[in-house]
Image 1: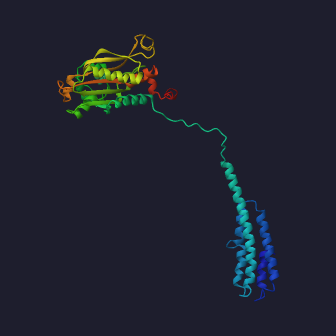
Image 2 (image 1 turned 90 degrees about the vertical axis):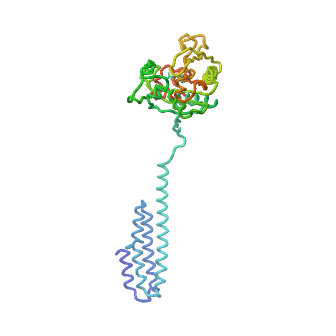
Image 3 (image 1 turned 135 degrees about the vertical axis):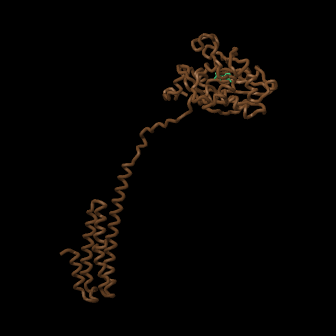
Length: 365
Ligand code: DAH
């Protein structure tokens, strides 16, 4: 006969108010059942098994629950006797269950921690920090030099009207200078700008008749060119100063200041007569070779000089078209290639390196 059945028949045999007399027998059965439960709990080898035992005792149909149902059946006098015995047993079993559950929970936590353990003695993973592209770096450096002497940075359009890219710069439709800049046309009126010079006229249009116009303008330009020193897309920076009493000396002084800031205070510059339709007179500016100091070497093709930018006094027609009176105001302008400056400054011999995103190249800057 199982303990449960034994307990049931025990209660069936009870007569009213007789429990006190049978207290010993009752205690014997309950104690034995309690011992058995404690042993089962002790032997349980998993949390799952402990929970199962818990349900078997205290669950809806658990042994203890069944026994407690007798509370209603016994007389009021017997009730405290039964209550005390059952309550004691209940406390003992619950305590044991709790201890066992905590034991397994701790064991599980320990396993989890072991699994998640980080070996702090392992070397860390290197974090690679990004940085600016060499073209961006040079561009920012150039803009900052001009910013410090009062030039405002403005930006133009990469897709430009033929009118601003050419006509307004004194380059009419049949002008041979258009061939100097083999262009990407989008349609008859629109072109990928071949230089940053259209920003000159767009800016003057906005500002006229106010003075001075003093701007520096960086950006991408596009030409049908592709070799080790020419790329179909490259970067230019345009400068323009328009005011009263501006002379060629202002142009030369400004460029000397700029080129010494960017290449070094020991550099010299020279201006060679040149031709651009939008400047008159025009000058090509060379800077003394930093590699040989001007005596001649491989870098400067043994001339001692490096070609660096185009410049000149703003053509009267360009001023006039923008609404300024060329008898009253003058201006100078210049345009330079950012890649060219970067190549000279860092001794890079192929322009295509700037666009290939080869990290071995980029990480050097
Ligand atoms: N726009 C010319 C070019 O791309 C460069 C240039 C020359 C710009 C003379 C100027 C200038 O502003 O005065 O070749």
